[in-house]
Amino acid sequence: MVVSALALLWLRNLFAVVMLSGSFSLNAAVLYVVMDAVDVAFTEAAVGAGIATVLMLGTLALTTSHEKADPGVSWPHLAVVVVVGSALIYGTLDMPRYGDPMAPIHQHVAPEYIERGPKQTGMPNVVTSILASYRGYDTLGEVTVVFTAAAGVLALLGRRRKKKNKMKKRTRSGERP
Image 1 (cartoon, rainbow, N blue to C red):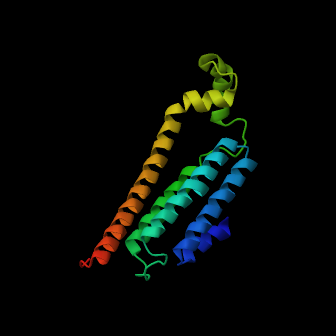
Image 2: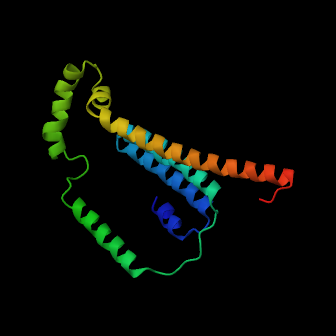
Image 3: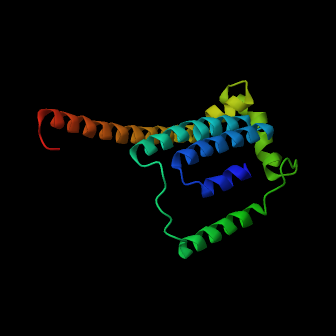
């Protein structure tokens, strides 16, 4: 995954970048399966490797497949990236170790869901009760974002197709485009 991430930085062919990005997301999904987060793995595979790749390919259909010439390093932008990246890394220092049974999430939230989830929601499966009931609005929001992005790309593709059809009709009838 590190090699893929570094290759994404240096590639100039945007089609290759899209394909490599989809591959990166698929590898992340496999990593989530290894970490026993199957629901997150499915989401990453469907959204990151699936719909995001399709949307980026749709965008490439409207633009060029090669990156514009490098304008050089923008020091203010690089400074913002370094500061934000450092803050994010600093924020992870207080996180508990992976799989730590004494982590706060394992002390009160997980037992609460396991004990009361099926009773409160009426669903016998704990995972289903959490995803369909407690995280229902979250899932609905994610679906809305993906649907909106897909509708936007399809609207852009349809607009370009209409322009091409108008130009073909004008050319056939002898009008100037």
